[in-house]
Length: 116
Image 1 (cartoon, helix red, strand yellow):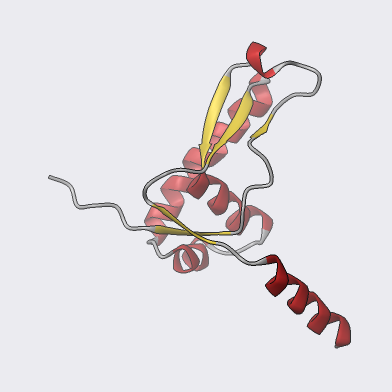
Image 2 (cartoon, helix red, strand yellow):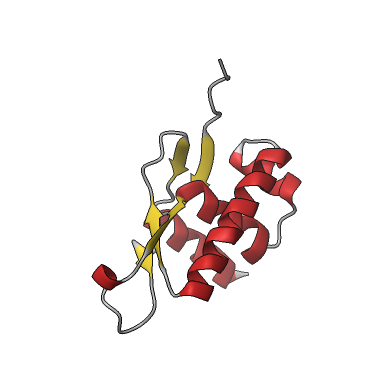
């Protein structure tokens, strides 16, 4: 029997439910599910420029797990872009623990940065 999966820490909320080609109804598109931890890993490594080790520390999982998630996520995004499929964001995975930031906290941070 395998050991239980560690909770994966993900920050913030998703900015939508899907990403698809323009002017094609969702009902006519093939759908590819992108899990919350896959999107978070893409964000941390590819957008924020963190190393896999740093991303793993931030999400509370090992570098090897980050590498596997990142590989899977990149394959899904590439497939969707090349074939014209829709990416559907799945936000209800039991092993994902979200850390939501309140809007008021973000505004306070912005105000502090503006003062400096």
